[in-house]
Length: 456
Image 1 (cartoon, rainbow, N blue to C red):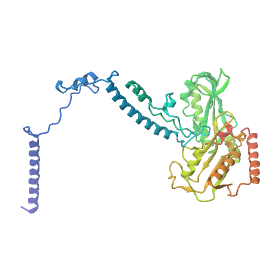
Image 2 (cartoon, one colour; image 1 turned 120 degrees about the horizontal axis):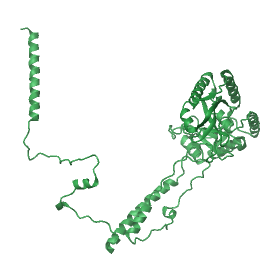
Image 3 (cartoon, one colour; image 1 turned 135 degrees about the horizontal axis):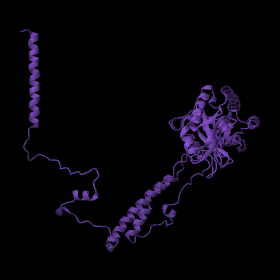
Image 4 (spheres, one colour; image 1 turned 135 degrees about the vertical axis):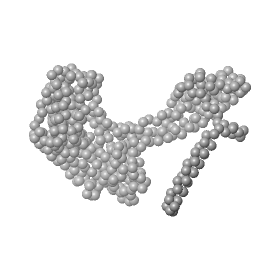
């Protein structure tokens, strides 16, 4: 027998021995074993009838044996004088602890919030106590009985803090039953009329407008002619409309309407017209694209953002310090955390952005504000977006001078030259020329159509 054959046989024998040993161990483990006194048995599980156990069934399952039952005492109001005094003392102590906790929470709630809308007054340095607010005397009351203390314990609850202020979102205001102000404007929109064969309800139209939101980067709007008011309004559920008009914006800060965006818009309009059995008056693509380019060129000539800078005369400022100053002045942090915005109410009472405050490339939500530092704060005015009647540049300069005086700095222009009286006169002259140009086009600064044109 050769060596190779011997090794193969030995391997087979070894494998058989391992298998036999494993089988013996399995049988040994399955063999029943006599219960030993030292064995620690786990408690028996309670029978479960269903996932939800009724209260009466649960009480029966957990009912203790008579020898282990403990007498239960219900709280009563007619206790003996000694018991009442003891209960009153304990309630007074717990009420005092609750008063202390409430005082701490009121102190925290009275601190100024990190974001306040500019039209809201700053928080006061303190608030009256809870007892004062509820009409109860501020001093402690004598514990005559347990019922009084139970009522007082229910009253002493921490007040919920108000929700943080959100950025003002301008929305059209309309009375019930009245048409919402129309949005479509021939100055900046390419309008496609849709003639309905019969009246159609907003409930039928709205589910068909899923593709009519945007065409590329351009906004799309759809409005209906409401016969009761004889006015155009955004399509609303529950209203009947005689005709429709769909419009795509010719230009915005993303550029002019191009051929691809126009084709996407036309395809969506044709699909809507087919679904509503309506006829659409589609415009010529070449003419529409040309109108978009002309409007975009006009907007580019008027798209001016005027900035003034507050430069430190000494050490750099930390981002945390700048954030504190901006928040205390009522500026609102943007959602992306890159700038603070000052809002101001227009003639209709709607809050509009007036100017922004930026601190270099600081992101106040992501950066380490204690480590980030700089010597320059930029106040940026978006000229077409701010109404001339509010004198936005004057407001920006007044706020810039206020910052410079409080922070030990000076106010300079984009060329880092101090702002003088002559420079103010020159800037006001340039702004007036720009305002006149927008007015002549029928789009005064700060108007709804101008805000749409100078947006993304």
